Length: 406
Image (cartoon, rainbow, N blue to C red; front, side, top):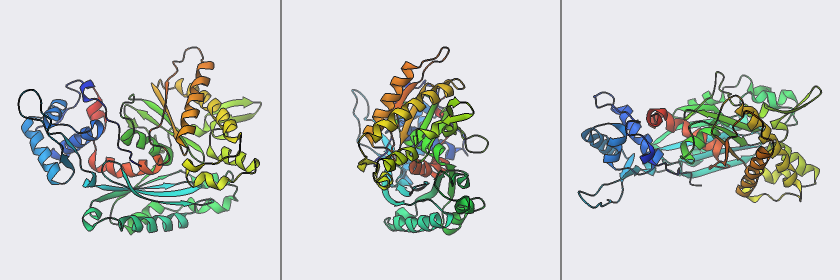
């Protein structure tokens, strides 16, 4: 899967929206700024970067030469205008750096190796009944070794880190997995990310899986999105993330935008939540009740073969839940946009977004501006790619607000 982003239009930025510094001693920041702009908008010539950043042409030339020498940028074909010298756009060098992303899921594990542009160079997948710390560490170490063996020594030296996307507080989810509480207790005190950091010579990063998936949409997805948006990812349980001012907001405990818990109905003392209707877990249960094979759901979403009527029933309930969850969330934060993605076949995602949009229009409430609804642009790999984006962002990018605030 190539998750290279769709570029935005730098012409839409005000000329003073990006500020660099011409002083010495800040080249690292300016280099990150240039790399962030090229990632955001695609290939750019030096003159355009100078205009966007406010840096002098000489400073930009020095930065671009340094980044090219380090193998992070590469020259494109000259573009000839009507007058003057042709401009030479600079783009990301795919082999400039590599990143590993581990997704810990309740029904599967995935490890991806991506290049500097976000293209997936290799993957290892494992379906399981439930994750344990021992099984995750064993899988991760074996998969990392397998993927690194695919790289040349030169490219191996350019691996910048491992990101991990995992549900937090896994020990709380034994019952929905059909397990005794004791089966998941090992997660409570196990620092498996620290164990992986000790085993390898690159840094390891950790983030909640919903926020990680949201980060993949922000870094690798369609770049022509509003500055604020709510994000839903449909996995074993539905989860999500929140982007405010072009930054993933993770909150005090790292678990912000816990959308699964949003109430969508109350009857007496019984509360119905989004997780009850919009999770793959509920689709899995419907498949089992219809006599189908639920195992194939977790192997490859593009190969789903579900019993007749099951998918339609699940989508109707999920769309209803999403509509109410979106309206409730919009009462608190006035997003311009809501994005829905997940471990789903592309046609199913499109149909679900369409149904949700129709339901939103049917149940509009006074005083709320209904946000635009969009499909996610990453898909099944969002959590693992979001994990891979953690070392990328830490080492090579600046805060998006540095170049998107007017």
